[in-house]
Image 1 (tube, helix red, strand yellow):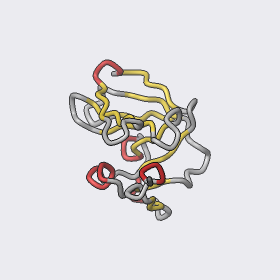
Image 2 (cartoon, rainbow, N blue to C red; image 1 turned 45 degrees about the vertical axis):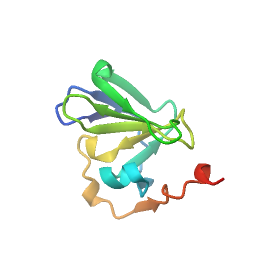
Image 3 (cartoon, rainbow, N blue to C red; image 1 turned 120 degrees about the horizontal axis):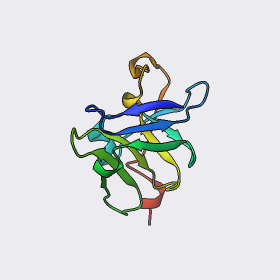
Image 4 (cartoon, rainbow, N blue to C red; image 1 turned 90 degrees about the horizontal axis):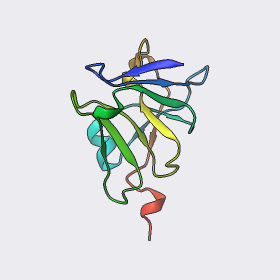
Length: 120
């Protein structure tokens, strides 16, 4: 398990990462575009909030399916439950201790702006 912390460290999570991190994504939906965050998808049992659950705020928009969590003290986005699988998690790779996302050259861009759940 690896620690994931917000900037003020009042929110702390433990996450189970794959041995080799190969699935790092950036999304172009309206929210992710503004956050500019590199993210790592995880399974439903790969994340546990161990500190600060009471100060996490949740932001939802559009279909209100995804839940985006951020620290109410420092404002840093830590993780979310995505629309495509609300029981799974996606984490902010920049909040991981000892991992520099700028060292990764395999960040994949995903098209959340044209999400299949938005097609009518």
